[in-house]
Amino acid sequence: QFNFDFIKMIIIFGLVPVHLFERCMLLEDYSVNHVGFTSIDSILSTVIEFADGTIGACMFMFCLGVGLVYSSRKSAKFLFKRSWVILAAAIGLVLLTDTISLIIQSQIYQNPALFEEAIWWLFCCDILNFAFLTLLFFSLVRKLHLSNITVMAISVILLIISFFIPKMLFPGNIIATDLIGWFVFQESGYSFFPFMQWLIFPAAGYVFAQYLQKTDNRDKFYGFVMLIGAVSFGIITAASVLCGIDIVTFFTSYNACIYNKTLLSAAWSLSFVLFWSALIYFLTRKISPASRLHRLAENTSRRITVFYCLQWIIIGFIGFWLFPALNMVPIDFVQLFISAVIIIALCYIISGKILKLIQKKRLSA
Image 1 (cartoon, helix red, strand yellow):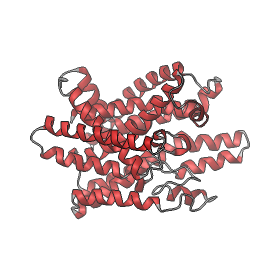
Image 2 (image 1 turned 60 degrees about the vertical axis):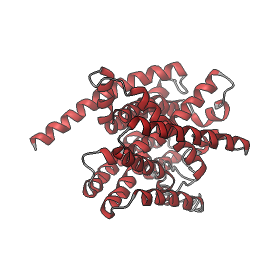
Image 3 (image 1 turned 120 degrees about the vertical axis):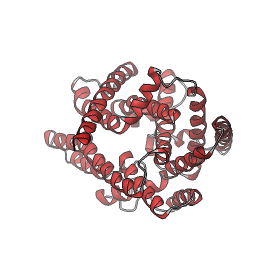
Image 4 (image 1 turned 45 degrees about the vertical axis):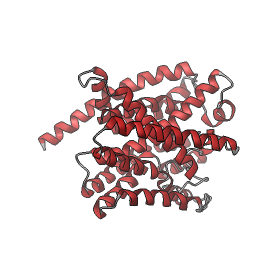
């Protein structure tokens, strides 16, 4: 599925400037003053936030579901084992990008708040933690042979139930708040991609791929998907605006709006994801498999997990140590995009070498 390889390439390359934006441009203050369409900076901020919240995160989760169908290794046993590898990667990544640096800084500056923040990060649910829970869920789906309707129904029901669960169950208890945040958004902790509120995206990707496998006419299938996505997106957007709902809250990171998914914001994001998937299919279907762009997309797709971890390790280092030492926080947009290009190139090259080493070890084992 080249169009999904291409989408994943766009996402992972795009996440680098987005994560630099979050770490090095003081996002909390920046969003309050600059998200909108009143200046060049505000337009860039809004585009970056939308790219992160909708094209990035939601599309990435959707692709995860698609990959579960098209992967050659998709048995319940493999998914179960793979989930624990992903969890180990999640813990290792947060240690390298946040926890260790915060603990060191808490000692340097004698600031207990930084140590507390280190613990917040250690137990929080980020995208790899979500992937761990998702793979566990789909190992059960495979084991129990659940139907597409059942998978979608479970994801919708969990999203609805999450609406009724308090968003501050254990204020002041760092570990309990973070662990509950793995399942339902918690305002008093670092709760990114809670399982009950985000499962709908990989579930939709999983069901989408099942129908895609069965179709004899992909152009017709994607044309129908594009129509459904565009119409749904337009209707939900128009209805939200007419009802006085600020659609920016569907995708902005300010006050963690993007992570606290509701049925409405999830439907809005999913509609765009369907439209975007079909649009990329039509734009890329004529690209030759022998072309450099085709090979780049395929290679990036294979390297995506390693690439993701590497870019966070690099961004974590420059966000905590390098840019502050150079008095470059907050950075401007020119510095951001130059830094992003350098980081993308480094991550692409290094991730390729790491995968080659892993393959050599597997062959020699």
